Length: 325
Image: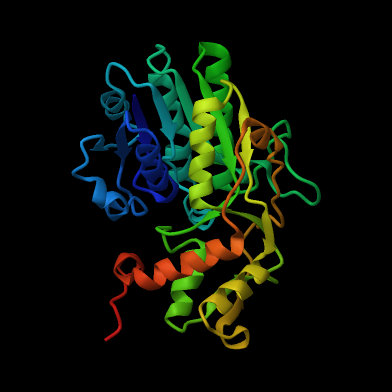
């Protein structure tokens, strides 16, 4: 088998590639990645000499690069390539529309001729917008409230349109907030961990009572793999972690895991513009397909803290820092 993974040097994409190669001994993976700031070659450096892994530097907005990666035949394409940080999308929406929406369209266009048997569009729970109560199901309307969420919602709709119009065999996954090793330290979990390890304060937006559902990265990678192999073309599958916490509850857990104090290490800052108050996913469709998250949240957080503690050489350069003398 030959799979093309876009954005495979990023957080979830790199975990997916490693999992896929471990699970499928007959698999070759081509990783197409533009190597933007969050695409870190160190995430897969140990695979550089693996015959079944090939890296190709390229942008999914570049149709020539996309077609080179796919070649004459690929069994599947998995699209992780995206700009993902909400704060960055508020400052620069155009970059998100370019990669997340137009890039997905370029990828879909390359698949119109039937050269693959399956494509997975990796999306997010943020396309549903904030959920005051209950859980978002796959049939709910999309109500994105940030430029990032809007760019991903547009990509989802394009994917479904290409399936309906051209027969592109696409499936969509919508995952909840994901955490774990190798995550770029602009996101809340690695940002807070690395700040706390350096005995710095962590910035909590507003009152910190925004609610998020947390999914361990390896569970997310397994969800994408499961949908790739068992999902129905044209289908959408929510992948929720099952651990819902307020940002303040998450902060307390991270402070405890890092051995710091709540009173001294929390700084409340102005809330994010248009900040969604709550996300929650109904994952029963994916559960019925045979996937459920395996990692207990407390265990996953402890392991994630331990990883960042042991891998300063990975994250300090990303924060523009040098190791302390």
